[in-house]
Image (cartoon, rainbow, N blue to C red; front, side, top):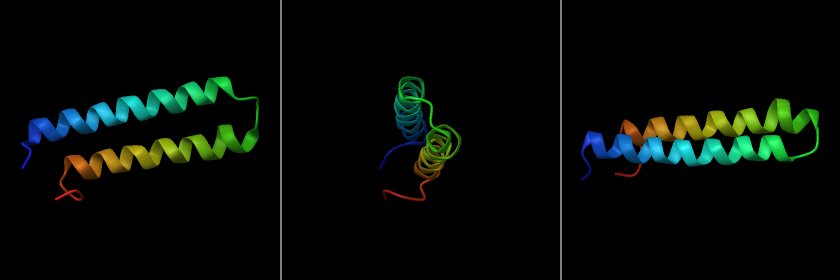
Length: 61
């Protein structure tokens, strides 16, 4: 069982890696309204929610 500090580090690491890859993708694809205004923000929101759920023990027990 992980402590709250360890879960926080893991969720922050997951969030940092996933958001940096999504921002890299955002900067490297050609201009596309759907990708820039819908897909990438939804993916960022989804990864944020999953990191929050891991930190608060709503999954992976």
